[in-house]
Image: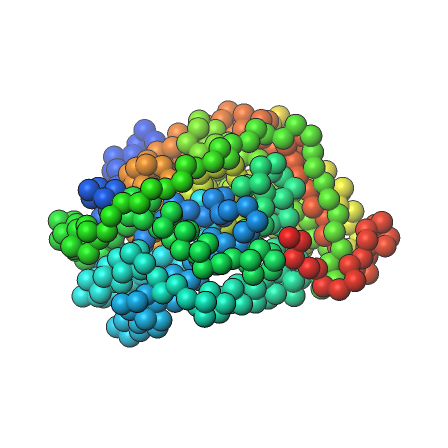
Length: 469
């Protein structure tokens, strides 16, 4: 692992994370400077001279929760359209400029944001900012581009949902069953009907409403002084006018008061799978950090309670994955109702109720007995080690800073997370286990191979699972 100035070095970091709170003498801290332009664009810069490179993230406060009704998948469609060029920089220019200089780029759509990320030699920062400002102003709105990207997203649905075993049921089917409000429950991948119904007027309105500078944050990390970075952003983005943004709908939901369950047949699966989800505490509440620690204890890798208890011990499961905010994010980047989700393949001779009973038993042990001090310390250390490792690449650090500013209103939240985690007590973990991981707040989907379905009383689909919307 390389040493980088912004985090003070790996050895010091791990010593800090492993030490008792009272003995910690060194504060883990990212250097962060923030500035807001007159048009509402917020810029977050973290200087790090350990590499002559830079990471950039432009995050817009729009995602699956805010896409229009009857336009499922529209936020994702629009993310693709952002790479189709502008009247000034035609299709392909963005990729060629960045990748041609040794950089890389990507974009993604999540429930609460859409992000566009790049990393390259620091000499490429000006071209990157110019290109990002150019597509913030406008896009090449054309029937050809729209049709092309409608087809691309539809093909993604075919590959990742319709023709894939399990078909992301643990994401979109789980949301549909667990949540009540359309904004939280609908399929963010989209239906063919809704995608094909999108018009150029829809696209232009979406860009106008959600892709203005006042609805965005730029994160810049790397070999550049904050003052220089702020000046560049002002040069390229300062003249873009702010645009009215539609009010955010109320997406809040209470915890569920009665368990929800569904069984599905899967024409492509070879072994049965179980998805289990619980509604989680709101972001930033006193239960948030304890729930992140509990998620680590239960599902954080091979040392977790559920892996050791159900995969190794009882040998009911073939594997298990999941966590708070998984898989469309992580414990610190949500801005509305979210789930702690578990996804496991289980052995065909095992009943799903036996798996649920075993999960309940592990939770009940924590509620009744608490967590030993060394076990709690190990979980917190692993959680923070993974957290800090995720911030090491400049491109990832820029993205997390921009997201923290956008979702929490303060990029310095990243510096507070270790303190929140270290402050979690065994009593905190017991409290959140007792409050949130209940049968009444639980959603379960059992997905079995088509050959097993008749014995379970589950209807068998005529073909591979179709997109439900």
